[in-house]
Structures are given as C-alpha cells and as structure tokens.
Amino acid sequence: MVNQSPASASKPRPWAEMATHLVDVAMGRKPADLVIRNGRWVNVHSGEIVPATDIAIAGGRFAYCGPNASHAIGKGTKVVDAAGRYLVPGLCDAHMHVESGMVTVTEFCRAVIPHGTTSMFIDPHEIANVLGMPGVRLMHDEAVAMPINVHVQMPSCVPSAPGLEHAGAQLTVDDVVEAMTWENIIGLGEVMNFPGVAANDPVMAGEIAATARVGKTIGGHYASPDLGLPFHGYVAGGPEDDHEGTRAEDAIARVRQGMKAMLRLGSAWYDVAAQIKAVTEGGIDPRNFILCTDDSHSGTLVHEGHMDRVVRHAIRQGLKPVTAIQMATINTAQHFRLERELGSIAPGRLADLLIVSDLAEMTIDEVYGRGIRLARGGRLEIDIPAYDYPQTAKNTVRIGKSLLAEDFDIAAPEGANKVRARVIGVIENQAPTRALEADLVVEDGLVAMDRRNDVCQIALVERHRGTGSVTNAFVSGFGYVGDCAMASSVAHDSHHIIVVGTNKQDMALAANRLAEVGGGVVMFSRGKELALVEMPIAGLMSDERAEIVAAKAERLTEAMREMGCSLNNAYMQHSLLALVVIPELRISDVGLVDVKTFQKVDLFL
Image (tube, rainbow, N blue to C red; front, side):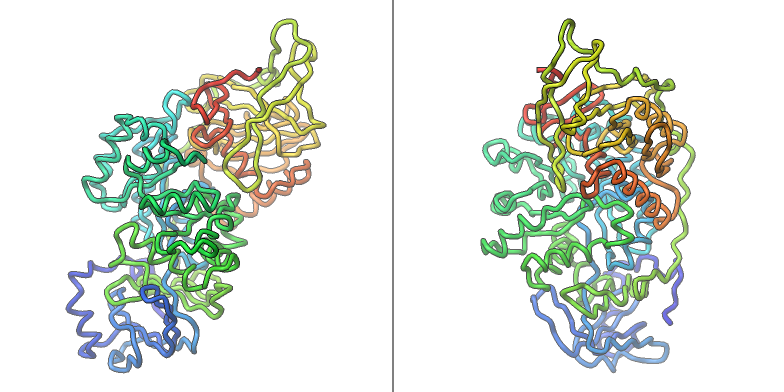
C-alpha cells in the first residue's frame, strides 16, 4: 500500500530543481518511486489513447511515459498494475466557488478528490464580500495546505455592482496589486462589472492592468445576451474567459474573440448541453472550450460527483471522451499558463492521474495526486486535517433587532385597491431571472401575495452592519403551496439575508433564526423549523464534515418539496436572487434592480 500521510502529499519541488533526477529515472539510472504498468494512456496532447503504456513517477512528478518501464523499477519502487485500464490526467475545475459547497476548502477537497478532481481554480469572492481581504487570505492559506492543487483567483468585484448594493467589505485596485504578490494567486477572479469594463471604469481597468502586468489570467463574467458593442468593449478590456454563456452563439462569439468559453454544469446551472453544440454541430475548434462547475452544493458533491459528473455529461452530449477530458485538463492548464505543471500525463508534470475502468462513464477506480494515492473505490485514503478558522470569521450575521411579521409588510400606494407590481421570475437550471409583472390586490392598505398564481414575497435583510433594514418585493417560480418561509445568509454576492415566503410570521422566524446561529439556511412552516444548515464561517460555510452538511442540505430539499417546490436545486436559485450583475431583475439592500439597465426601479409600475 502506498504511504499516505499529509506530509507525503505536500507539493513537490519545482521542476527545475528536480529535472536531473527525473532524467536519471527516465534513463534507468535511478529507480522511480512508483510505476503504474499496462495502462491505456489518455494522451490529451495528441488526442489519442495509447495502449500498453507504463508511467514512472519520482518526487511527485512524472518521469517516464512509454512502453515497458522496467528500467525505472528498483528496490523500493512501488508497482501498480493498471490491467488495461485507462490512465487519465487528474481533472481540473477551471472556475468555482468553494463557498457554494457550504463547506470549507478542506471539506470541499475531501468531497471531490474521490471523484478525480486534483486541481481547482477558486474565486473566494463570497467570503470577500463578508470579510474583505482577511477573508481572501484565510481561504488562500487554507488552499496552500491542501494535498491537491487549489489555486486562488483574487476577487475583482467587491461589491459586484457599486451603487446598487452594499456588501460587508470593499476591495480596491491596491488590494489586487497586493494579492498578486501572494504565492498562490493565479489571476483575477470573474470581472462581473461588465458595464464598468465597457465604460473604462478606473477601478475595473486598474485591476485588470495590475493582473496583466504580472502575466496572470483575467477571469471574465459577461452576463448579458447582448453580443453587440458592449460585448466587444468588454473583450477589448481584457477578460480572457467567460462562463456566463447559455447558448451556442455565446460560446462561438467568445471563442472567435480569443476568449475561452467555459461551459458550466453546477448544481443548478445546466449550460453545457446548449453550448457544446458549437463543437458537435458547428465544428468549432474544441481547444478553446473549458469545463467547469461554478457552483456546486455539498449534496451534489457527495451524491453525484464533481468534475467527473461534468465530463460524463459532456460525453453524453456527443463529445468524444478524449475531447471532453481535454476540456477538463490540458485546456484548463494552458489557460492558466500551467501546462508545464499540470493538466496532462507527461514528463515533468505533477503526478496527478486517475485509473479509470470505463472512460465514457468516468468510472474512477483510483486517484493519485502528486504521486500519492489519495482515493480508491470512491473513498478517500488520506487524512486532511481540519483548518481552524478564527472567531473573527464567525458571528458575522448582524440584523440589529428581532424581526417581526410587520417588517415584511408591503404598503400600497395611498388609495389603491389593486397594484401592478414587478416580480422576479425564477428560471429553472439557469442563473438569469425574468422581469415579470403581476396584478396584486390590496388588503387593509397592504399589497397581498397571489399564492394561487405562484407569487409570494421576497425580502432582503441587511446583515453586515445591523441596520435592521428590510427590502421587500415579490418573486415567482418556487411553487410554494403551504405556509412557509426559507431564509439564507448565502445571497450572492453581497450576502445579506434573503427570505422567500408565503407567510410573514415564518419569514420573521427564519431570519431571526439565522442571526441566532450565525448564518446558514433555514426553512420554517407555521412556526415550526423544518430544516437548518448552520454555516457559522462568514455565514457562508459550515465547519462540519461534508457528509453531515450534505445530509442537512438533503433535509432542506425535502422540506422545500413538502411545501410544493419542485425546482431542481431550488436552494441555488434562492441564493442568487440578489446577484445584481445577472439579468433581468434582482433585489438588493437598495431596492429592486433592473440588470438590463443597471438602475434601481420601483416595485410598482
């Protein structure tokens, strides 16, 4: 059995310091640490599967890839027989937010390693919106300690839309300049303020320039279907990739402009199937397509998988298995200028590989990271010590007072007995919303919900400064039929508390409960707590094991179903209702926001 300890999984020395040793192993002058024999080499450089291949590993890096590695076997060499199974590079998630998993970086890694993920490119802008630079540093340092490659992108937009929301912190150009000196910062996180880029906003331009000066990758986020001049201005401004496309024409437009089209399959975002047609039907070169997850909650990770799930899905959409694997390995590595370090099974690279028995189904038998076996048969084989978050990262939910049902009253214009209101419309499995309208009746001077037509209330409760402020509006699409309310302190991106409910008393109880436990997500019905996932770290992440969090999240899903909500992954839809950089209509602490025009709008027309 391969020695498995946290120390042995530490990052190998740089290639330049190991090159002579790797040469000696490749030449047979020194023995390898590990040789994997008789595998089918999935070569993402040539796009072929090479039979009868042996792989020799030394010092956590590949030294030899070819036929018959007997010359590299010596005393102390561990030999593993692949028995004709596929040798696949460790999978890379090109864009993701750990916080969406409801767990810490450590727990996220524990959950995804058995699914073959050995490299992640994380954007911690969720914790940045709560704790600012200290929060980014906490996740950066935790990422460095992991036994797999967890690279960090410096958040670019905190708050995501200045003037349209108030987050718990604000990041500046100077902060980006400082972060670019940290050892594990790989580039700039998704630049969500796309109107700002097109308008040459000095903060956006300054952050992009600071990243470009040090030769690091600039992440994109163009969340608009408009492919006219605003899109061209955004591309000219410097972002190098984008994961917000939902149509084949979106992917094509980005690739033609020299960007990487990132296709995401998260817990609630199903954007691969439509866009991959650009390759399978349109014949577009797949080298500039990258697979990612963006947002995956703990239930998805534990029960369905991570990047293996995305690759499997892409293959089912008509991609050749090797092409889908390229989109989750070498294409990602090249994009982040790390192709000499990861993303393939080739000499000099970090020895991250999977032994796979069924390529099309991505059946992963063993996972190796840096030459150490990390998982086998879907079970983690190493221990990753918990990362201790300080108290300063906790107790961040401050609502200023105990909320009452009347805090969620919506007063009608004087003298009105009926109003026409703007309504946020949820779109299943997509991040955008619709800007709907509804005629609502007035009862005793208050605007009533229309539960028969699936119009209930949404409220945003300010939680960073304890102002007691509540913004009220209407939402449609959850399908709640019972008296209930769900509240979450995960509310991308400013992370106030979002409450959606059909009963104002339950709405107050739910918001107060989150203040009591330090954040998370909770469901109430007629005064009874149906489900609770505590997330005390910044009100975004649990400090419990991923399996425990997944079980609590499953109970939450069940509670939502009991109340009539049949949406796929409705919690994720709920958590994005305050994301004021994705069209069409959102809620923030300043009111309703029309994201087509980036203006605050009245609730009533």
